Image (cartoon, rainbow, N blue to C red; front, side, top):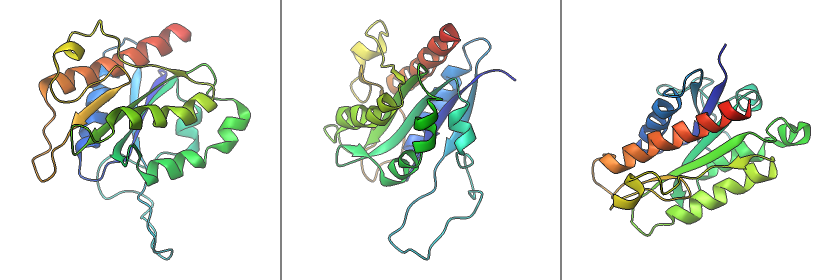
Length: 197
């Protein structure tokens, strides 16, 4: 089995899921690397509500083994007040045993996000999502300015990671530059993981 990059995400309206699939395509452009798409269940204030064991559509739920055994990861979430959404945070908060074992130390990590407004907290979300992975001892990977689309984008895309501007109430279309930057981020994480292994 080839080493894999875990593309872990939560999506509410589909934009972050589309980004995850583009990042996975970038990962798989690196020879010998595979992408593993995984999501997390929603959380609910109604304590009696539970999610089905397998989602009705999209990627399957991430397991502890998926994250522990990855060669690197890209984590994505819509922005919620300048931070990641609660479902992804809840999942990451449960990775204490992986932190204790050091299984993620020296593996590359990246983040991606979508917002409903241009100044809706893309960069703060990307950076705050990185914090738990830095605590895990991972190596954070952004997007360098050697990627030409980073200089020409008028929607999403930052040196801190891939981002998407999903206007509220509009169709969820990823711009050409955003798509290029998602794939570039996937290639970067996979390329670094390959070099480190």
